[in-house]
Amino acid sequence: MATPAFSLSDSEPPFSPGLPSGGGTPAFSPLYQQIKGLILRSLQQGEWKPGEVIPSEFDLAARFRVSQGTVRKAVDELASENLLMRRQGRGTFVATHAEQHVQYRFLRLEPDSGTTDSEGPAQREIIECKRLRASAEIARALALRTGDPVLQARRVLTFTGVPTICEDLWLPGGPFKGLTAERLAAYHGPMYALFEAEFGVRMVRADEKIRAVLPDTAQADLLGVTPATPLLSVERIAYTYNDVPMELRRGLYRTDTHYYRNHLS
Amino acid sequence: MATPAFSLSDSEPPFSPGLPSGGGTPAFSPLYQQIKGLILRSLQQGEWKPGEVIPSEFDLAARFRVSQGTVRKAVDELASENLLMRRQGRGTFVATHAEQHVQYRFLRLEPDSGTTDSEGPAQREIIECKRLRASAEIARALALRTGDPVLQARRVLTFTGVPTICEDLWLPGGPFKGLTAERLAAYHGPMYALFEAEFGVRMVRADEKIRAVLPDTAQADLLGVTPATPLLSVERIAYTYNDVPMELRRGLYRTDTHYYRNHLS
DNA sequence: CAGTGGTCTAGACCACACT
DNA sequence: GTGTGGTCTAGACCACTGC
Picture 1 (cartoon, rainbow over the protein chains, first blue to last red):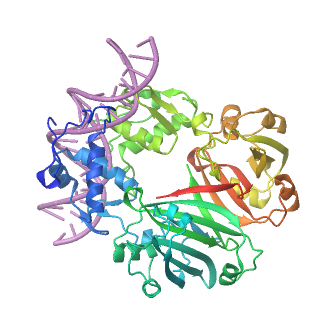
Picture 2: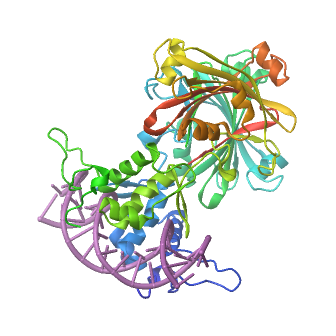
Picture 3: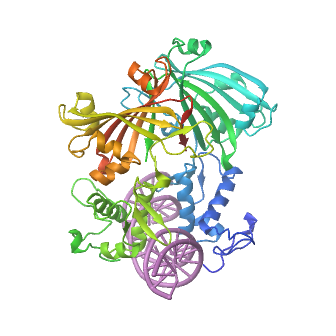
């Protein structure tokens, strides 16, 4: 391609892939990375919604005025980051947390003798959900200012009759305006699917810090264990697009019947 | 390319990429997957050793009689699995555990307020290393038979003066014949680098099961904590090529000064 | 400078899914 | 059959490294 350029509908000036973009640093960015950025922008802006198909590689190539191979490489990366899902013969879809086979995408807890995921769905119980102002610590985790409104919720997950997870979570008040204990309790399915459907907030990645701790009495009660029972503490910060933190979650996992799985490579 | 075929030095018959390979199942396998398998075989057989450069994409393409792009895709996958390392302008290298910037590739423990990895090297102390026969449980984990010879070792890792990790590990006696406490203690650097250099065993991936537990008195002593201190139990099975298990490791991590990090996506 | 990996293209054909 | 993603090729050019 001699002069790659974007269509007017993308409001992008023509550019040459190999050229430096500014003065100081070279800032060379491959064409496919720029295409990836444009697709990402469309995802953020909701041009294609979770679960929907996006245009075919051929169409995207025409739209961005690049070759199909270049679009392919951009889509490949987005698919490997779990933002898109490719299905041969059908198309490329916007990833969603509301699918059976990718439910609990971020939950690494597995039953001890669980042959597979044949554990059945978890029983979810909302303990509370209240509005409050962010402490310095919460604010820092969510990139807010101290005192900004946040939602705090606590819930317990029970697997096959055994209360196994007790977690507290904090959400920024703005994006989640209108979330109540009732709406949380009424929704059957992964919480992130609810966030997606009701608030347009898509969690795309998360970081976890894991420790071994002892529960306080309230937590021990909720899980039906003694306060001397060691539990896994899982502190998660979940991010939407552009590395914007959207949730802080502190979970306590019982590990007498389950374990936290991790694959290293 | 009309008739892709391998050179005689690879002892492979010519083949057509898109054709079924047998009678029953189609068993279609893309060309690049087959190339990947051949490169993998060369890695296993030690044709290229850890840290060495492998032939250029162009050379590999000629050797396998496929296009450079096909080799590229095979190498891409091997690089994404951390078996190869690409360095622009220099070549593609066999990955190794003996490199500074990938040391502790499998250790996910990080200091609490650690700005980065500025913690300095760990102090390693070998507590014991003995030969014994595999219990049913150990044998199952290492794909051995009960009673097969195994090596068992225990060590403590100390960071900035604080004993933080106590781990037991079991290795199959065959591949690790000749390993002693002395050789373990004499080696400075990651244990997997020693395995690589001295025994030709390369760990390429691992699975971990994490729980919260209490230490027994011996473990508590070694870590300098009370037996009531909750600790992270990390059970790891490490694999070399072809998913062959080569190590079972049970670590106890102190998480009052460190945490186990995990990235979800 | 030559040699390496990295990007981009254009076109052909295959495997798969839906109609 | 038509349209999708998936594979493979051949060739051009760019970016980086080391001689």
